[in-house]
Length: 525
Image (cartoon, rainbow, N blue to C red):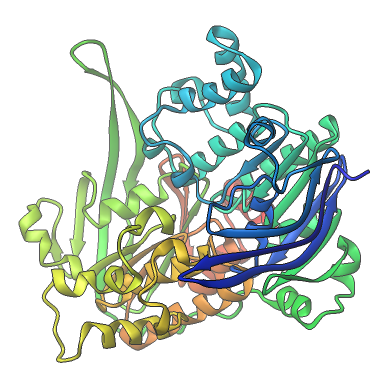
């Protein structure tokens, strides 16, 4: 008997009297101690299928078929049974941690809530278990992070907290929806090993949803390939990878960012540079909040980026990559020189900076957290046009339709809200919002992390094309070194706030000079 059995699952969403089919007759099972991967492009129905297992789809969903856990029917089950199973017997790791974690509660409180509810743990016993979980998922100095709020952690650290929460009650079935999306390659390898060890030790069944086929090859026993709400191919992992039968599976396996960016034009203008840039955050204690130390996020960073050039920034989660970029954009305080288009802007006031903002744009890592749920795609993308008073004689809808087409979105969907798009589509909206202003400098913070492999290829080609066309300077932050290699002219490697190595990207990939860079490169294979 399978631990989790899904038979003829059909899911539709009713809106304005119309039913949109998202999942069409899907069947699969997960046995104890087995990892089954659901693979497919964004919007193919992977997450909807998983959420159906414990009725987490909301009132607009119409679900038919059968889902049984431990011989109990989940579809149509009463709320009391579902509450008992959710988070205890069947646990989830969600794709976007910033929207899954409560911004008003500390990490300790959120982990402790689950332990108290399902295990009755409190006080020192709960604290010890929380520290054990955080240590297991690779949170450094876990004790100092207990009273941190989600916004005080990096994207990768937030994802690790989500994984700790999911593992807290030792579930029978763990459903992991892109659990390593936000993680750097070394921690990704550790988390995959951790999940494999837990699966073996606990006899846990693992349903693993991902667009990263490298992970599937490493962790899965069986693969189900989904396209347009249907499973088009299924079988043992080795068979699927060695001899894929369906054209769509073949397409997925061949999708990988390749090539190189266009050469930087001769004599290209220097867009931005830093000299001895430092970002230290004070640690305060006591009644008077006296400074007792510092979190040294960035130390002595000196970088340069020219028009038409991409500087790739790599390193483990929490190494200071995003902090460095935010400091260059003058979104956080720093020490040292920041020069933009020949002008030292570090001491500029907010009013002085306002006129530069349209030229300096950023695409954030978590698209759902950075897009307003109350605004349509049209309003989100066009907002900057109004703020900066940009008017080229066309209507805002015309301009938005053009940029949506550029980033691979259907302009007919511009009146939809963010929750009506898939994760990958939301990331493209975030890219469109930045590109509509035709900036000179763009920070891309993990812009492809939420995208499936085929769309990653499209986005890399899109960004390279936009760069060549408009002479854009990119700061490209990513843990996916294949994407960094395809995008970057220069690369810098960060570790615990220090730039440990920088130079021409091709040289660093071929001849890394430091042990740390070699470790990062090895973790991608």
